[in-house]
Image (tube, rainbow, N blue to C red):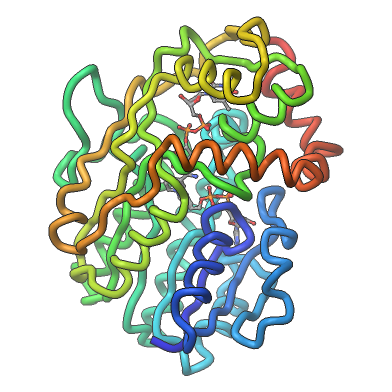
Length: 337
Ligand code: NAD
Ligand code: DAU
């Protein structure tokens, strides 16, 4: 594999994936296509700007002529599709961009890849398509899809389109579904970077509902290694789940963060719950372990400390985001909770 196209490479996971792939494979070059929405940030990849093995093309995955101009270049071995509207709370405020990008954008990309006979395609999906668990059990690749938020519904719709293209057109796709990622370069609307930033500024940490919801945390580089394994060794038409085997309630994670940051629990503010809030996510990743020889490498203890250190060392990165439009969003999201 010499040249791949990555979509959404200026976001959190996409930028970590591009950096990891270029570090891992010395012959590989990557074209990154990204619309630079509020979540896309060129600062996530400044270290690669001079690299001859990295190209950036600004554009929208819903724009077929643009997508064709990149995917149809003739030397593309694979497409890895990260680009999406990714934040559940924003999908509750306004679902439209989620359907536009996550459903129509995926369809546009699939059609372009099919017409240019791309020989490998990875759909980066999410465990949220499975819905919510009770106290027991895990999501497996066989769990029926039951998305609960507009975000997860749009991701499930995209997965169904991919599945149909495999079935109908022998399209060479695999689908990955991962649990909650943490690590550097995550947009500070998501729980961890938001709470780190708020705590550093002695602002309250808005915990939704009782804080007893459970998430299964995985380091972003473990997710990226999983996507790479699925890209190279996944079976066409198959789904692979990735998770960190690290379940934690939101309130336990919040208290741990405050302890590691040396801040008091009094910063915790319980606020009105997220509508339709999924109770628990937990991934059974046995299939990826057995068939892809993948397993999470980063311990949560070490990964969390390194992540906190990264946000402290790169406070300017967060501060550059937390102004203007971001503050309008913050007010809409948290103002009257
Ligand atoms: P992100 O919001 O940080 O980044 C999304 C990127 O996609 C941004 O750079 C944005 O500019 C770009 N983008 C959005 N709309 C676009 C469009 N129409 N055309 C081109 N580019 C566009 O998201 P993330 O957290 O890095 O998630 C990446 C992918 O991984 C998503 O598909 C998401 O559903 C999936 N995922 C995320 C997690 C998680 O914990 N963050 C877990 C599992 C799966
Ligand atoms: O499981 C994978 C999914 O994880 C990805 O598909 C999504 O793209 C990603 O955003 C993430 O979704 P969540 O909704 O789980 O992540 P978020 O960081 O928004 O919230 C994590 C938990 O923390 C969730 O139970 C809601 C809660 N929360 C979140 C925020 C932003 C709070 O209590 N307060 C907050 O302010």
